[in-house]
Image 1 (cartoon, chains in turn yellow, brown):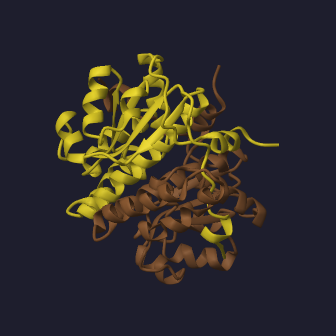
Image 2 (cartoon, helix red, strand yellow):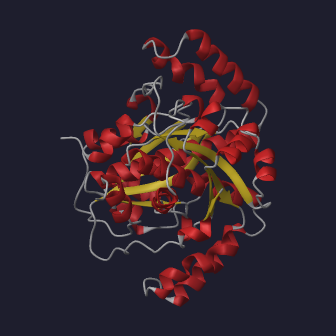
Image 3 (cartoon, chains in turn red, yellow):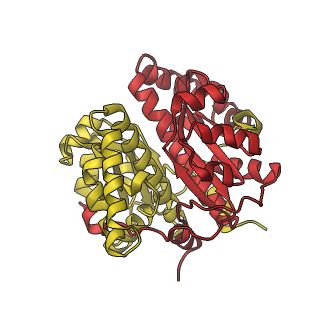
Length: 205
Length: 205
């Protein structure tokens, strides 16, 4: 018997065609984002920022810095999923809810901040890696959450990062990692593209 | 009513404690990997490599280059999830199953290879970004697939990349992006750590 997640993963496609007449509510956008943030991050950094672009005018602005890809404006919402540099600077705040809930002792939280600072401070490659890693984990959770709500999604890396940063007021620490269009499908989407055989990408030792 | 993926995301925790007496079969490891590769990648690059470390001796070798983290050896299997540089060089092969299935016309596949080569050749930052992005998308799918099978998972970035590369014969193009321990839980795991309020990480425009 297939698990629900197996079915979701097998049915998920990267959709290009969206019904432009159907929208998502603010509550739905917030719930999608909440679910995305249940993805893990190193140290529970939560070094991400989600910009949900859903009005027609803003979607057109985003499309203009995403090589004119029609789905950006046709989908109900297109998320700009950003990872943040200098994650260590946000860790004390990110972990505070866990301290307040009695899950992480304050001394442990302090030691994590010290460890993360030691690892990330002055290390731009590690900071960028972590920004991309966190945002990508969140984006995958976001796409599957959408799939579970009967929606389709379309991840994109084809955009102008500097243009996106300028148009949507990103800070120098916000790295736009992926655009994710989400909405109701229209006709003409791709089937899921076949993958390489598992034996070609897996080694078991 | 909650969707199945909502429940999975809400129940997923980053587990530290595993039952060391329980193992996974080769077929289970292959199925987990197959599901992980249903994650999307740019151009369908599939620029990833999974090394499933499951024998006790190999797990101990991995643990030694992962700062001695006990879960590496306690879990039934610890995956080394790698992303690959020079993804454009593997694209023709990665997309061939889609061409063979009649999903992607050969001319379109050729144009994707040309586009990807133009974007990635001589651009080490973009290559590394793509390696980390693809591997992270795959790792998130892997963790949720495990959760759906009644297993728990523990993602780790705390390891020595050079040591992992040496011990597990990675090529210069294989970037170890994350370790993911997977197995049956033992007592003493964390609850899911609370996240920042959605309003702090989401902007809707």
